[in-house]
Length: 441
Image 1 (cartoon, rainbow, N blue to C red):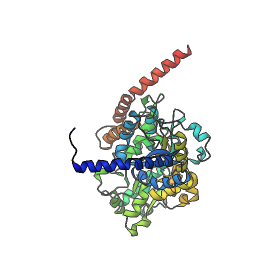
Image 2 (tube, rainbow, N blue to C red):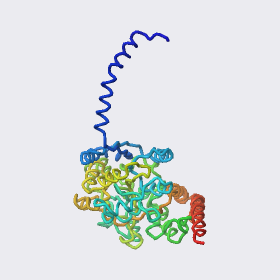
Image 3 (cartoon, rainbow, N blue to C red):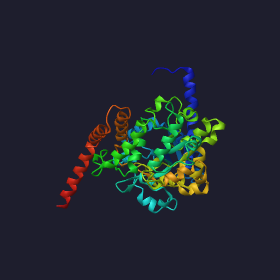
């Protein structure tokens, strides 16, 4: 046997002498950890960072449960979750964007929550906004609990609207257009009324849903963007570009949207709740009194002024070995007081109505419009392919915005593209229908 160097022999002797002590320490640790469950929680972006503050209180309340939280960038989250599912290494609980719910439900990654909610004393269906709750339901099964909410409405320059003769934003399409035309007459050809980024799907889709368009048809097997409802909404959307009310620009064409809003390059912007904080930080003190928020106008008035149902939810993964403890964590994060703390830490709007009411957030000068808008939201079709479909909406809409294709041609092309995207869905549904028919024979 090769002789060991003297220094290494000495170190090994010390390790050998320590082995009994290490064994005792290991036993003590095992004894201390006996009966303790460790949950894994994955959070995205800023929310994934601050949730650790809430988890500390959860662990104090539940000394037999530890939570290992991991922050994941939004840009990497989707692929990481899919990889984890394939490798059977998903976390117990995670934050999930609500447009991902249908996809992860379809691949069998998520646990159904219907029975858990039915027996819960913490989570009550009536506490949540209808449209937001609907984003978590796939084939009549609940797979997530809303954690924070998101929707779009109008940020506007109160002074420019007043100069055009309006003390508030009109709530019907016809009156809204008249107000925009009045502003345009005042600001002239080199400035615009509304910023509708051409590389967003949100506006044409929301206008379509306001008219009653379903976007998909035949049990979500085919695209339905050529429906009369969507065609009419799409024409309304394009009219704002045709009349010079909106610039044919995307996000990358405007160097600093906040600066352009402040200098009056455009007087309105359909955007989301995160911009309440951004406007307060980025606009000069003397400009703070000049901006306001308002729910989206609708075809026939406020009652038809629907917007998108967005945000993120907390989900329980099917592979979790500790479903009872994981559900306790979801219930804890869903409490109104925890929703309040989460809002204070992140600025993300609470999913629970009680939190809005207890904190007086619903009466805040700028947040109130979101409270009203959240009463009128609609969910996108709950199909796994929805994000791919929305990317095609951008592609075909932009062709018409920039004058490269008539509206009818764009919508025909969009339906054809969506039909191709949904080809696998049709195959699966047809197989299920055939199997069900054979079982009934």
